[in-house]
Amino acid sequence: MNRRELVGAGVGLFAGAVTAANAQNAAKTTGVTKIVKSGDKWQLVRDGKPYFVRGVGGTEKLPLLKSLGGNSVRTWGAENIQRDLDAAHAQGLTMTAGIWLGHKTHGFKYDDPKMVREQFDKAQAVIKAHKNHPALLAWGIGNEMEGDGNDPLVWKAIQEIAAMAHKEDPNHPTICVTAEIGGGANKAKALQTLCPDIDILGINSYGGLSSLSDRLKEAGITKPYVVTEFGPNGPWEVGKTRWNAPLEPSSTEKGRMYLGNYLRSVAGDSACVGSYAFLWGDKVEGTPTWFGMLLPTTGERLAATDAISYLWTGKWPAKPAPDILAFQASVAEKEIAPGTKQSVVCVARGAGDLAYEYVVRPEKIEESRPDPGQKALDAVRTLTSKDGSATFTAPTAPGAYRLFVTVRDAANATAATANTPFFVKG
Image 1 (cartoon, helix red, strand yellow):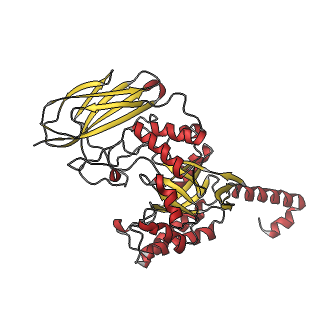
Image 2 (tube, rainbow, N blue to C red):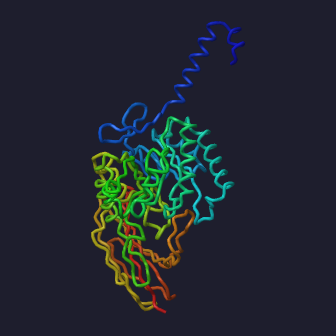
């Protein structure tokens, strides 16, 4: 409504228009989030109240996340940002909205002004379009795009996007996500010195999480941080067989890793403003079960989910996921003859009756990649057991394989997993 229309409409209509405008402005500023320091402690303040991130990476099963005490989700790119923001808002959750930045290993050239400008323009369009969404918590600018952390052009591009984000949207902080903090903390130092418009360091940390807090302090990092991914030790951080197959922890062991590492470097550090556990859902990376906090396809809760719920709420679920007490297989980490008879036993404890399923799959021989879209290789053996013990015939085709066990408590929608690699000799 322009000024001439307002004058013609009279005082009453003018007052109504002002009231409507005020309501609209109030709606636009809902969810204002700042990063502040009080004494020696950093914290997020959202709509005037302290806000500690209790989050996960992923946007599936949000009612379950809410029921377990979660309050936020994180995405990596903006392809489905409107859908994801709306879904989070429907559950009373917030979202760190990811803005994907190019990786040099994928062909992006930070020394190409045209590519850099197009990336900047895309980021600006996303921020302009969604800065007033009530579920928005922060902008997650990039994810592990820094490589070894030694290219100043990467940090220059990040700083330019972060400065633009502050100009377009002063109501939400900026986060830049790196793979760990680099040798000598070079990545964290670069963000602190070269990217002043990055408000919060975003750090993906797995096996190193237990020492992250100490390493940041030793490096003189004074910016606050959020752990943007954490979970079990990755395939690159564990022991391997002679044929280079990584040894995956059981879901029970993973639950302990989530618990202990969080207590050391998330709950125990005044510079940390929260975390996003990885991964809410499932994906194939290393194996089909390595990083998922929920069982693939069917979505039952695993021990990692129970652990983070305890960390968020101070209470364990009344009916927790099963514990794997023992998992022994005659093929475990061995080279065996083709077509031979083999045995396996799993001992687990749960809140209800348990069912056991064993699957043999060929091992994926290429290097594990973090990009989406990977699929597990088809099973060559599948069998079930009521008591956890089973026998099977080894594959006849030579090569690397893996034996998986899934323990289900169907009544309580919970599960447990474990596996072991083996090799069939030619």
